Image: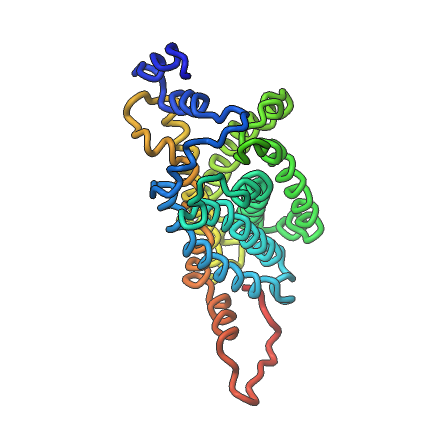
Length: 356
């Protein structure tokens, strides 16, 4: 039975919608018992979560195909000779990995035709407990690689004389190693955030894990420092400063470089890739911020589906990236075209390969 004080709290209009959602989840949290949860009888009913899962399925599959093409393009030896090409190769690999883990975690686990049962599906429980955390590892790696690409482009524009030293291949590889360690560290709370209830097979919060002070510190750093400060503030500052310098290219520093219109197209391409990343990863943080500061203005349905909206937007980024590459990179377009069309017999090129 629900405590009367909790019922009164839920009717209190002054409580923010995020807190209301947490109270509702606490009330609905399954109690460990031998009884089968009666709510499973309603799994066949189509809801917004099922709709997001069905819409995300073709989106993720298309992203896997397009990201796979980018992997083929950027993992070629001529592409990996430059640090930017090297970073784009890893960005494509981790975007593919993210979509690979997102396919079961964001879509398959919530398809109504697969989860319509009187008992909680075992495969869904295992996906949410054991596979879903890897979406965070790969997502953070995509974030870190995007930051490295943005930093290298910023150095190339503002410090062209020092770019070879500051953006060497050795430094880039060490930065990638540090990024991987940081991504795993930030994902530690997710790996034991939920456990499977041995009585009804449902994933339930692991309170002993989530209430740990060390895990709380990691979550605080993730939410307030890494996501809010580093990702959005740093990326936006870097890209806005690059845009400003490109607009006023008559500055002396820009005249000292040999940057041609082709190089400028590459810079603009990188800017759009990174801004698309910020745009597709911001809804979750924006909704959470509004939830914490608003009482009745934000519809409750949006608050409940915050994760689904965020997942849907994140799956859009690889498609935006592919379109951006095709628009701004002539070499990328030519390389993709060569993957599907054979050169005429006897046609060859003596020119050395160049990075996209």
